[in-house]
Amino acid sequence: MKNKTSKKVKISKIEERTLVLMKPDAVKRGIVGEVLTRFERAGLKLVGCKMVFPSEAHYHHHYEHIGKIISRRGEKTFDVLLSFMRGGPILALVLEGVDAVSLVRKMVGPTEPKTAPPGTIRGDYAHVSFAHADREGLAIPNVVHASGNIEEAREEVTHWFSETELFSYESAHESFTIPRRKH
Ligand code: CDP
Ligand code: MG
Picture 1 (spheres, rainbow, N blue to C red):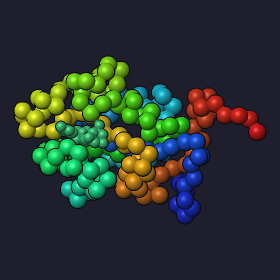
Picture 2 (cartoon, protein in one colour):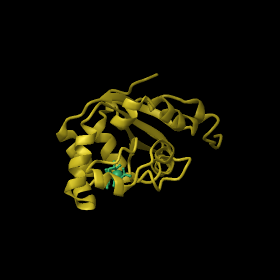
Picture 3 (cartoon, helix red, strand yellow):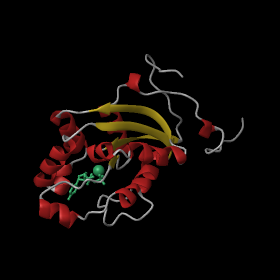
Picture 4 (spheres, rainbow, N blue to C red):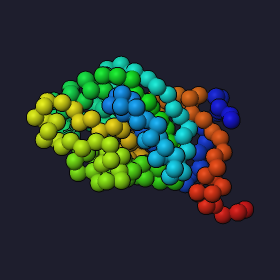
């Protein structure tokens, strides 16, 4: 296994990288292993992984500078979300694969667990509605964060991981799950 410290880490043009955060609820419930297994089963390659307890400023950059939560969801949501995320450590991952960004979003499911279909992570491991969270004045504990689109993924991976924390190696999926033309 080689950590490319000096050179820019290369990924194939047909592959993408995306950021997944196992939120404090996932860590405290002890389900990070199960959730990670789902991504591994699909053949996504783990190229970065660390347990962290980020500062408010780090989350501010993630959820407002990149994610535009205040303009999309309002200040109240931003505040409750930040206090939820600051409630414990999280596991930050970078996953790589063909169409990884949209594939991971599909596996994670929509934001509201109540409407997330069975088979998605949010549908299988959570259940509350926006209405319930709003009534309680709390954030929705929906287990994982996943980058929303390719641009967001690029910015988020750079925000959370330095190049020395991202690894380049050959996974079994490159021979089996991801078909490639022989040259
Ligand atoms: O996470 P996702 O991209 O699906 O949704 P988002 O609009 O980017 O919102 C980020 C996070 O804010 C969600 O995952 C929820 O944890 C939280 N949120 C909330 O607690 N209550 C809302 N009404 C909306 C979002
Ligand atoms: Mg989002």
